Length: 600
Image (cartoon, rainbow, N blue to C red; front, side, top):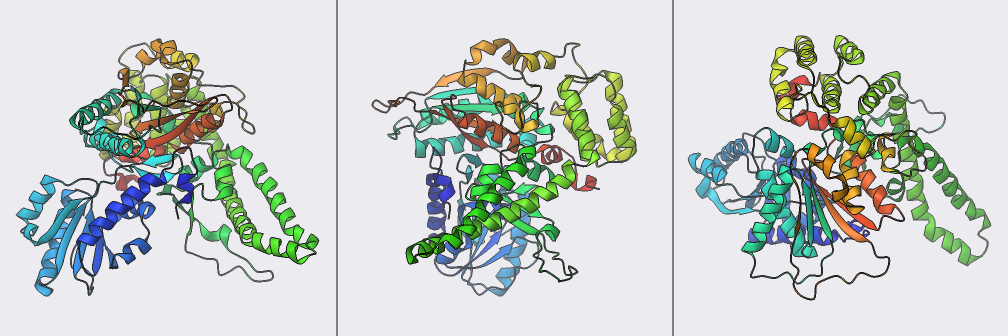
C-alpha cells in the first residue's frame, strides 16, 4: 500500500491513483490473457505505481524482460511490449515478433510507449516489416512518479546530458507536460519563479500549453502556492560533494534505485548462539527505503554523526515497551499488550536493520581514505588553494584510484575556482589520460562542455563572492541539533537550497548581484486563477512551494529542504520534484562516454 504518500501536506496518492487508472484502462483494451515484455529500465519506476497483484487482476499471466531472439513460451492471447521510445529497442521487438509470428499466428501484439509515442520508432518498426502486426500502439504518460510523501521524480536518467551536451530538450517538454498533469490534479500554481535557461524554457512551454487549453478552466482550489524551477547547472557544486546525511551516505556507498537499496548480506545474517557462522548468505539484502517505515523517516535526514545516538535512544524505548509485558496483570492489559505486539516487533526488526546499515556505513566513514577525501572537498569549498594542482588528487591518480573519484574531485576544484588556468587544466587532463587511457578524452570533453571541468575564461572567480553573500560555508555546523541547512554537508550549505530559502524570505531582490553571477536568467511569472479560487489563508497556515530541479537532485538537498519545511518560523512547506535522483557518481557517469569501460 502507498499510505505514506498521503501523509504530507499534499496528497501524492492522487497522482499515483490517476496513473494506476490509466494503466488499468490500457490493459482492459487488450481482452484475454496477457504476457508483458518489459524494457528492463521501466520495471523499477512501474513498481512504485503498480504491484504485480494489480496486473494479475487484469489477466496478466506472464512477465518477461525484453531480450533479442525468441520470446519465452507463454500460453496467452496478447503480448504487450512496455518500452521507452528508443530505436535500438524497436529492433529487438521486431526480432521477437518475427519469431512469434512463425509459431502462433493467432496472437495479438500491442506496444505501450512510456512516456510518449515516437514517430521515429513506429517508422523503424515499419521498416522492419512488423508495424502491421500491432493491434494497439499507445502511450502511457508516466512523467512524475511519487517516491515519497513529499518527493516526485521522473527518473529520466539522461536529462542533464541531453540538455547540456546534446542540446536536446525532450526532457524539458516531458517536465512541462508533467507539471500540466500536476496542475490538472492539484489546481493551477499561481506563482512561478525560475533560474536558468532550462527553467525559462519549461516555464514558457507551460504558459503556452495553458493558452492552448484556454477553453477548459481548472476549477480546483490550488494546493501549491509557488513553483520554483531550478536548473542543475546553476549549482554544479552540490552534487559533487560527498553527502553526509544517513540517506545520502547510503546512496553514495551502495546506490538507492527506485526506493530500494541492495546491501552486503554479512551484517544481516541471523546467527543462532553456538552455531558456526560458516553458512553466511550470499544473496544481497534488499531494503525498501521510504517514510512508511517510522524509524527510517526519523533518521534518514540526520547527519550521520547523529544517527548512532538516535538508534540507541530508539533501542531503549523498544526494550522498555517489551518490558511492559511483565506489568500486564489483568486480561484487558494483556490483550492491549498483544494488540501492540505486531507494531513492536516491526519496530524491533526495523531497528536491527538500520543498526546493521549504520555499522556498514561507519566502517567506511571512519576510514582514513574517507577522511582525506572529505578534507580536500572541504578545502575546495572554503576556497583553499583551488588555483593550483592539488597534491592529494595527484597521489590518487598515481595510485590509480577509481576514475570517478578523481573526476568528482577535479570537477569540484574547477567549479570552486571558476575554471583552471590553462597550465593546471592541461596538467590534469594529461595525467588522467596517461593513467586511465586515451579513450577518456571524450569524457573530459563532455565534462568541459557541461561546465564542470574547464579552462578559465576570465580572471575573475565569482565563487568566493557567492559563498560569502549566501553564507554557503558555516563554521562549526551543529550536526546533532542543526539550526541551519549546512548540517547536511557538515559545514557547506547547498547553493540550490540557499536560493530556495532566500526566495521565501526576504526574496530574490535582495540578492540580485549574486543571481547575475550564476548562469541563466531569473524570472517570475503569474498564472491567472479563475474567480473564486483564490486561497483564503488561515492564521499561521504555511504556504506550499513545489521546487523542481531540472537535471537532478541529491538526497542531501532533499534533506535540507525537509529541514526548512520543519523549521518553526519558516512558514513554508516544500514538495520536491526532479528529473532524476542522483549523486556525484551517477551524475558523472551519465556524462561519461562508454561509462561501462571505466568502472575498474
